Image (cartoon, rainbow, N blue to C red; front, side, top):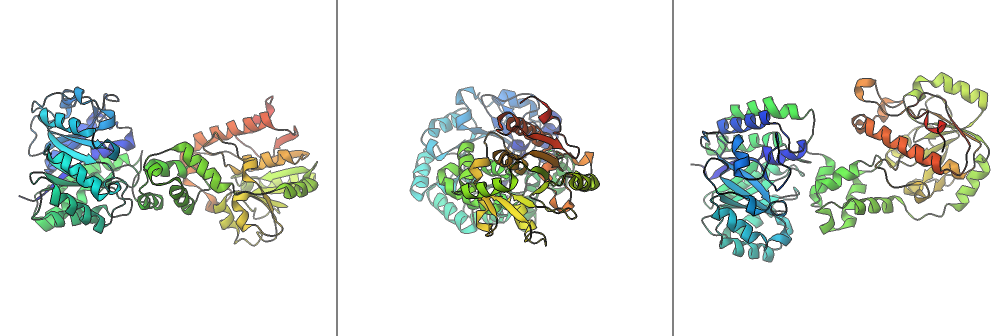
Length: 541
């Protein structure tokens, strides 16, 4: 018999990606397939006080979960995870042998004393007890020893090393394992649950299998195709194949491949997971993935900005998710202190009372080029492009508020010749003749896309008392199925613009309406090219 047992938790850790709703058919199919593969433990979901229902891998007790447990359990044991803060142990019924066999008690470091009676009740009610301390790298040696002394009195089936933020290297795992192995009651297994932020999950799982040999029974967690929030988890198929190849285990790889082909590959059409640079940064800073997801909604954020913000908010805050703190830190980063009064005076002197043509980088800036050119010849406007230089139409000014776009255009031959108006978050890149405007003057919170450059430029022009504003290339966003792209040049395309088209269009409409209502200069605003937003300025402010 192998010293390593495999626990597949696809239906629990993968559940975060599908709002815990796989659907009854998929749940039954995945459970049956995992049983056919002969994995040792099958985690079927969560124990929670609320949120359970049809098609979900969330249960109130064993009676609720029983409908998914096969009559013939074959050689597998069935587990659920109970988050201490989300589950009342009074709701757990006695183990009658016809539902799940084990409960994994999950808790934060600050709850480690409170969890003890919770764990005792799990054992008293007849279930195998797994102790799952969140973020084990967040424990000092003293705190970890203190936890082990307490749980030794309960004698759990297993204590897991949980790399919550995917921050571990092999020496970290070896250190924590040695500390637990030397002090944990000898009847308990030691488990390992990792996340793949730094591409280490599979390697660490293999190392864990080797370092436990001859010392402990080990339980290694995995999910099919690594399915899990953010960077995902150790792929079950990889660690299973390792055990088959190196330790002679008898798992059925074909059954696992059938599950991936039949269920998991289809799920990638509605959700995504896996390694990315941003998830790597989350691993480096032991940061909750929700922080990363929130920051990635900022279109002009860079990887080094994410790194700066995670560092700035501090160790405790980044392990949870505090959106207000992230927002204020993001604004602080963008809003370097800048006295822009002289620049505003100079710009007002050049633009006050003038007819303005804004050319945004939407598709129509290319497809409607002839119409835009005719407008320029007829009206002789001051032309301002937005994070964009048109290949054939000359600009008087280029408005820049997006660091990524600025880096892109800085290599264009027009870049050095055009006058630039830029927000203060880009001030370090400003030339002597550029006009730098304080970011805080133009930004307005309340929308995820609050840094949209067109909105910022409109607010700036409102303070300059221009005579008339005309807009081209501000089309709005479409899905891939609706056209060939959103931008005048293919090199400017953004994948998230396709994915969030409806939401972004809605927010842009709201911001334009807000601008229309609040503006100080009631000049005429016209659209030269077709736009989803062309009716906004027809309404009464």
